[in-house]
Length: 288
Image (tube, rainbow, N blue to C red; front, side, top):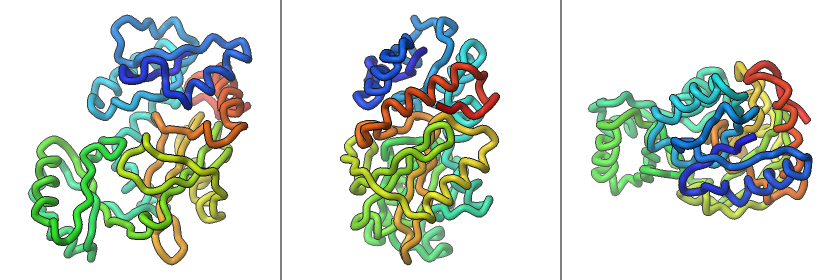
């Protein structure tokens, strides 16, 4: 078994090493492998679990090509259809159209000349977030308050020259309440964590949390809606006001699963992975 990782983390993340240790305790030879290394023979593995490939958004086309190649010679989790769909944040618009409560999102096509000021006027937004549709860890994300609209316009059109862009309202409650992530293994809720709002995924300090019933219902509805059940998922919520939580991200590719925040999580994740060994990608829901 391989845990696909990046050149920045050739030995996997500290969090993922907790799961590797649990797999070793179950007599499974599991090792990290850099996803874009030219020396890895992916056909040598029974299963490849995409984990800390945190650089993939900087070379998305190459990554998706790798996903296709690996899925032809090994069992890849999450399955390639979910990875491809989840790699572009237009999925947020699709989920909103399906009736889920999602942070309002304006998706702009590459090369669009629509002014940011027009979006704010049409939507009734004041402070907004501008970010690329393919991105992670707040890379190239800019929070634009009303007094910095000119800088926001420049940033928007610089991003539009390279690809599609999302514009969303900045939810003021996030600075006070923070964010919440719900972690699922094999389609089953396992644990939730809270963390302070930060611009970047990997400096978060997780605190174990209890999700709201509305969050559980929405997360499980989204997972049921997917065409293929994921081996792992992280469902991120932001405070939308009036006690409501809005989906901020659905992470199906390389999320931090915060295994360190729950003593049972590394073993539970390892057991869920073992369930995937018996099936082909997308053939069934792997389970412990």
